Image (cartoon, rainbow, N blue to C red):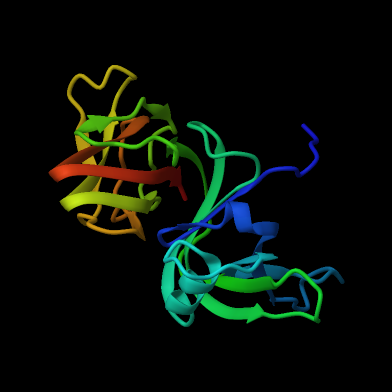
Length: 243
């Protein structure tokens, strides 16, 4: 289905840059390695080499809060963190691309009279995963719970299930959020199995985790969360995918 790019979501670390971005580009590439020989029948032969992905964004510059573009860009520059891009929205089931990437560069500034811009690039250090949003960013969670399941299909041997978590806000006294990914043979989740556990989060930030490469025969997955603290409240987004 063709569509006009009017809305998109960009999450990096513990920041939602969607409202400060007007350009998001995502690219994936595999090197072609020449293996042409005398038995190639006069045609070039190539093999796939190293794969890479790149996320580039641009928009309106703002600073003064850990969730704003200047603060998060400086804190992540030269470091590796979680990145998620949604071409349309970040509702449950929405398409999401995510990876673990190096914040490679950051540019700001323009001529007098112009809206102050920013631009930057992140380069992947893990595979680029095509998945779906499993928990949306706009619902505040204050107690334990779980999401509705999504059918991704079994994870083959040698493949991995990936999960990305962006904690956008954390409130309360000593708040703590622990997210796990569970699997099931159907959408009932009567006896779910834990396949991934993310580190406990006490403040905004991002994580990407993956399974070890063993097969997972279950085809349904969901996220569950445990929340502790005094009057805790979290805003977070989670995406899942197989690569």
